[in-house]
Length: 470
Image (cartoon, rainbow, N blue to C red; front, side, top):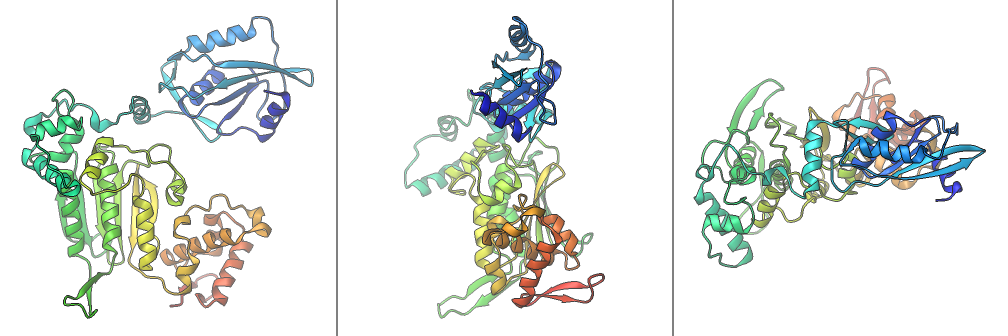
């Protein structure tokens, strides 16, 4: 590494892969551990937070002592590469830390992870997930120490086998337990958490789902509570939702009339299957689905898995990481899911094809909430919305108004229309804040929508509201 490279790194400041320290100590080792548990990085000693090179004193034993301190205080032991440089007659030390293959790494029994430009103490859940990922497994592959094979239904396993036979057009000449062993769903003939959830015989305490039809935020007119196997839950959830949808019959000239529901059934099915497959079943809370007159809310315990952000999710710019590998594989074998990580993309595509408001995705209460809207958009409104870019305009800044690209504007207008549909009284200032741009930029976008006949302002700036023109 050359001195010029180091100066470039320093000029960029602290970030996901760079940390500055004025001296060697406890904080340096914490950063080494955080980089080891994430994607690697560099700790530069002799530079302050303002990117000023302050230098450190070096002796013939300094680097050796640094290595020994790091080695003795990390578990598993980390031995990083350490380089020294002299810049403007001042010594700086660069500690290069690769991502450690066996995670998590600790410093005095504490585990840290790098996030943006700082180190965060890992929760017990994050520690467990890192360990599971390291051994290329997942929670649902672990032996269930409470239940036994007597707690699962062989009839349900046989139905699962029949689905696979029908999908693959092959005959499986194995008993239910032999087949589960062949798939490695059992561990030494011992029940795993995943198999228990998939084929539980009777009541399952950790698969609870509450589904309700609401007339208002507090008035429930119908509900079901489910505690069964996961395949059955998918079918019963969809059946209950379908029961409460409005349907119209379309005459097409065919012998039978076509049915069209006020919500896209394919999108509902994708959301429900994703809920069941990717839920964090270690969380004590259950899944909740609320059906309102104008929307359906789906809440699932467990935030996005594998460091994926909402922006990554909606843009499709991520590699799929599965929380429950056994459950996901079983649903794939049964032909219920086609490809890991593609469900959200299909939901967005379905909503776009149906011309309805893009669904809303939120991380709330240590879980993921998806809101599917009924209201449809028409004409130029649909054309102006980039469904895959909703909520992914974090990189717009107040200073880029003059350099706005057509794609940036398209993304932002899509988000503006979504927010107005949800809150017709939203202010320009709030729109600007949510989109991360200046009020001037938002005013310009709104003027375009007004001049195109898509948007209308009713009443004054204060006390008025927005109206979308059909």
